[in-house]
Every structure is written in structure tokens, then in C-alpha cells.
Image (cartoon, rainbow, N blue to C red; front, top):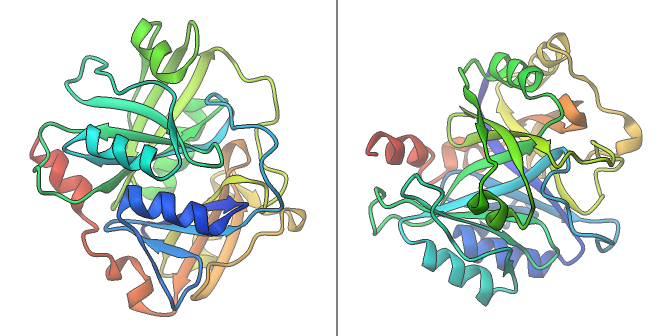
Length: 292
């Protein structure tokens, strides 16, 4: 059984710089027992060495794992963390009509992070990860897969754009997207299919060590069983050519390729300190949204 999203993987050319940026933004701290894991209050980021520096910055509409969203009461506080630690904003924070403040930023290696200020959150609440976003070529098929895998119902899809504010936030022109959301327990998953502009490049990653967000890792009490379940839902066993690396500190780890070639790991940790049970506030997303 899957209990939540244990971590999102990120292949970085400069591990120390990536750790400093993402640690400052999410409030995550390195785990000395399991080398590459940064631990935030409700999720982890696994940093691992990329094969080399990125030759291009990831396009916002490229299918795959596209961004991690970090939330706080004060979007200005998040903006300051981005700039102070070597990142940049695509555009200043803006309101898309929800009352929240949003901005897309890039980390020092060009990976996209979203920062979001929620006026209904407690001002004293430390930063938390709100969701991981995936861009897909087929949002209906992708939602069927993840809804069945996680046993949760999605909200959406619904159309976003065309809108000057949406274009400004993403640095695009004439963007039209279908979006949907579902809960992975400790964090949300967000899905986007771009109707305009459509990405014309490869949808999947050719290697685990390719720079950028590398994989989603779901915590499981039986990784082999959940891997088989994912395969019955349409995933395929991960190609050895991708060279996936098991999570540091894992007792068991299995990989599949899901919709759009997204690499998915099912992991059982050797220690409860390294599992979801060891997080400081794994229910923060549900609690903040319940108080909306």
C-alpha cells in the first residue's frame, strides 16, 4: 500500500548549490544518514549527481516532472529566498484571480519552482511543499493512472487561459492549459496539458542522471506489489538504460516508467526516521486547505 510521496528526485550538476537553494526555500535540512535526502516538513528532495550541467533550461510545457511548489503565507518571503540563493523569477508574483499570489522561478540550474502565497495560511507557519507538478500529453489517461494508483479522486480537469496573467507568469504567449489536482496524502500532485503552445520535443528522460527533476518516489509497505499494480495500470518496468538509483537508506526499491515516461520509484525505508513517519508535519497541506 502506498502511504504518500516520499520524495521527488533532482539531478544537479552542483549538489552543494542545489542543496543550499532548495534547503533555504523549503526549509529542508540534509540527512546525514541517507546522504542525498533533504528533509522538509512534509516531503523530501533527493539530490543526486547529474551527468553534467544542463545545456538548456527546461521548457515550462515539456512533458514530465515540471516543478515543485513551495507555499507560505507571504509570497514575498519566498521571493526573497529565491533571489538570495541564486535563483531568478520568470515574472514578479501576481494574482490569477484566486486571492493567492503566484510566481514561477528557476533555481540556479534552471529548474522550475513555483512559489505561492496563501492569505488564509497562518503567518507563523514554516514553509511547506504544496505540490509537485507534471506536464502530460494526455491528461485524462494520466489522471486515470494516478487516481487508481493512489486511490484518490482528482479535481478537474479545467481550462486555464488564455489570459494575460497566465502568459506573464509563465513567460509565454497565448498559453491554454487543462489542469487537474489530486492528493498524494502528504502533498498534492498537479497535472497540466498544454493545448497551446504544444511542446514538440521528447516527452521522457533518457537517463536517471539527466539534469533536472528525475523521479517521483512513493513510500510503500510492499514495493514489489505496488510495482506490479502500477504495471497493470499501464506502467512498464524501468529500462535498465535509464540507470535508476535506489533511494539512500532504502530497504527495498522498485522502478517503473509511468505516463509520459515519468520515472516512478516505490520505496520502503529501512528506518522510520527516514520514512514519512519521520517528517515533522506531514499533514500540513490538508490542514492548511481545511482552514481555507
